[in-house]
Length: 144
Image 1: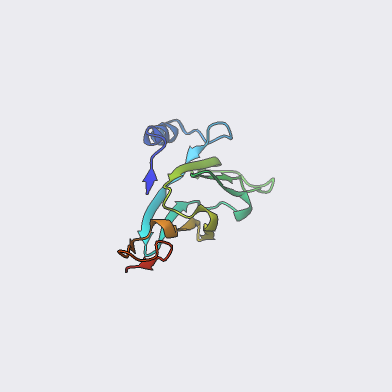
Image 2: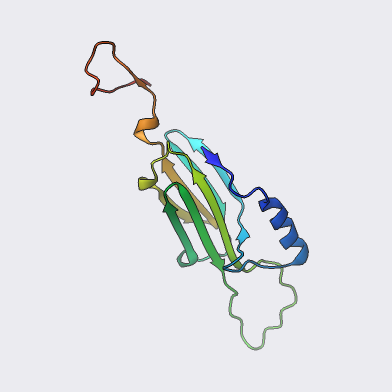
């Protein structure tokens, strides 16, 4: 159902970890993702801990799903002295090529506990159906 669009994603992630660089709008950091089929829908779960929902942008153009998010620094008072800062800040992005068998018109998005979950229904035209011999070709019989 998915096609990887960036074969160097893992190499970029490791380089960013080693160099301590954060994502920018021109070169965003990748975000971890799980993808699986659950019944009659395809589910994509993306880790975005500490990202406000108003800082998440989800677009679909043709069959390309793009998720962009920005983790902004938390403002601290003048008396705060930072001792350690390991949580990455900046822009994160992920692009996924969706198959034609998915209904991109009815994607549902939910964000809970730092996980963005996208649910994409399987398109009706992709579901198995029986073909009647000598019957009316406009009549569909779903086998299941």
